[in-house]
Image 1 (cartoon, one colour):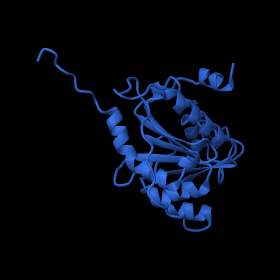
Image 2 (cartoon, helix red, strand yellow):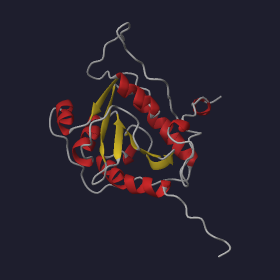
Image 3 (cartoon, helix red, strand yellow):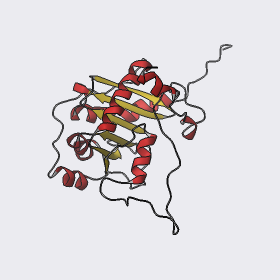
Image 4 (spheres, helix red, strand yellow):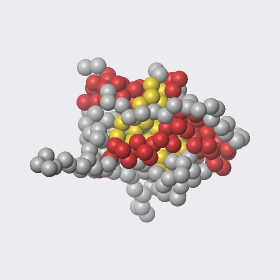
Length: 233
């Protein structure tokens, strides 16, 4: 069996953890790449090894697994501009020009192919950088996952607003940004969560900024209830 089809065949169906009844217009999660397992615990009688440290955060890693990306090395969470500055060694560069926002797509197969390619590239990265904040002017929590520190740092400093601190978890909007993959830009809504993939030439800071700005409206449109038409009227 080809690798792609095998990978899709063994994906756990974790949509029930988010919603038992997906909203009208939302895609179901039958073809999505996820790993949802119980989070590890630590108590007085047991400890975990190796200990956590910079780039090794168990809660962050488990939440990334829930997003369909299994970290193989280090993963850094960026929730404030100061962290972006420290990791980058200086202020992140602002996006240049006006980028194009990814749009919700109807071709699920093409999206799945792009998602698989992006997730595989992210898992192979020497380090993952996870920027988290609210979409501009909203309280819609967003997560940007990339192996490119510059893109993640720019997302935190110039594309997101700082959100209330919370434990690492899957968020309503997730961007997967993989410049090394084939060109692609697209989005789907699964279980009331928006997933955006930006790859290749589409994986620019300007496109990240535009997609984050458009994300709340895309999510709202896809999850809005459909008005029933009274045929007798």
